[in-house]
View 1 (cartoon, helix red, strand yellow):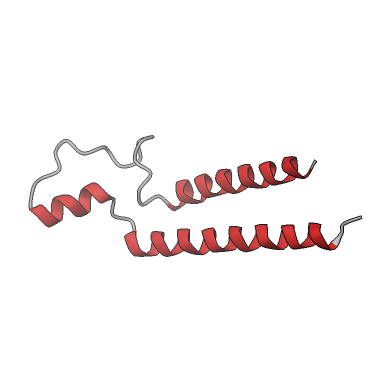
View 2 (cartoon, one colour):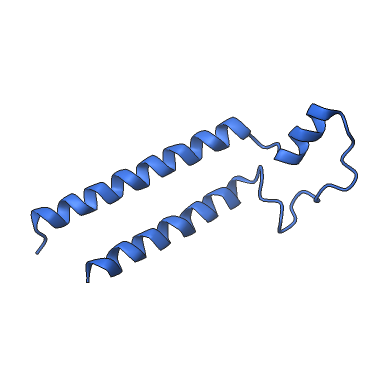
Length: 87
């Protein structure tokens, strides 16, 4: 049976998750599909011959699946830590 303190802790945790989700979506909306290297190259006027190939393992910028995958992993990790700390 959950007590009032447990419910308050769960509520605070869900609020924190909601804030991080909102911030993550806002950042993705602001940055869009163009990676930081592409924005930098356009700003300074250089060509991107040595840039990381799109779709490679190290190029997560602009890929919504990888954004949500990493966000999900972080959220799951936070949830596991929260439930483990209750014991």
